[in-house]
Image (cartoon, rainbow, N blue to C red):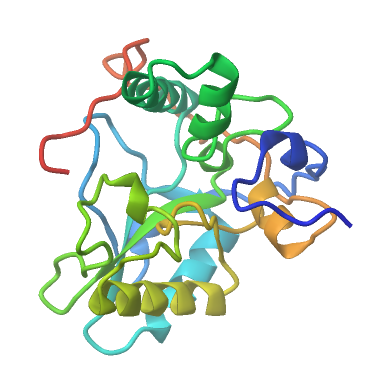
Length: 237
């Protein structure tokens, strides 16, 4: 059996068939001790996850020690936003590494954001993936990155070396709660957890994925967001 890669390459994920279970999207802001996190980019976010993910998220939040809560920065993501995010990361990495070939760029960029692919839908477009943060007693984000800056790629991996004791402790607290509820982490990004998508199947050795791409019922995109321009970070986030 081929060992799994922390990069979860598209070439490996496409071998996992999707057997769509038909589970609906639900609003995660209705869950107890689960909040909408601060946005990283300026576009309309939807507060949706697959029902099975939301159930597990609620269980994870309930298992945290007193004073801690969870915030979801984003769950389901529209395809046009996914394309803009991919373009932003591509441009950022290309600017920092101007001599890299497109092949090398693609392999690296794909570790941090998924390309649109019919056989391997980006995890967020399935409603099975979410970006999560831990909130402390005062409602602010717990330290999970010090001594690094939030956008420093050196701290992105779950087990990144050089983290402070408090950052490592808080990551372990977050990971323990989510994993205990049946959610799995994409190890190249400490904040990304999923259930039911191809990444979850890949990490857990499941024969099939349960979630394919989905569009919310009666949903229409905000025309101000449905443009070709790459995303840009909100200052300070």
